[in-house]
Image 1 (cartoon, rainbow, N blue to C red):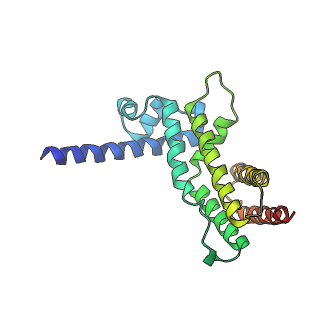
Image 2 (image 1 turned 120 degrees about the horizontal axis):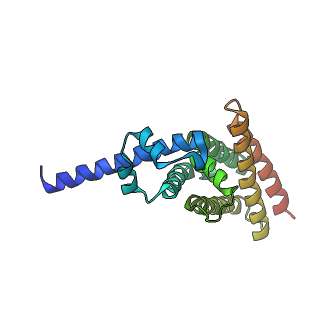
Image 3 (image 1 turned 135 degrees about the horizontal axis):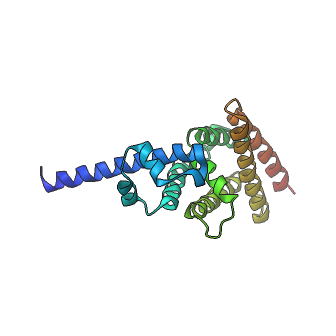
Length: 207
């Protein structure tokens, strides 16, 4: 085997191992929360030695932050406003909201773990919490950009208020589903939320 082939194989194995570790962490953290997650538990779940985990991640905090980042990147692709051919502003906003909800159902890890960390206060702030607050700010800006595109008459203060309301409302609906169970139709709730945001934005844009 040539050096190039060996390098490619090692790189592929490294990527696969990293994904196995992250997948195992999602399962453990989903069951036990941040405090109940440990390198030993992740090692047992993924079948890789602790040394392999430490090769990829500095510590548990770094590992949790990576889970949040990976899940957020997957979810963020859904936060895109359909083009004008998709219909009226309300139809476009509602379609985006439905896509966001479906993506949250499929990849909820960043929001579930992030909210846990955001609501806790520790002497030393976990990196995972810092990462979540950063991705939350990215989400706020994405929503603000969507509102500005749909309602150019809105001033900056109105856009910021509506973006805050949109993100906070989505958090609440997600928590409601987590508490109540999978029977909750998150897509329908997000579509309703989008209609309320649309109506509020339309009123504010004409003041």
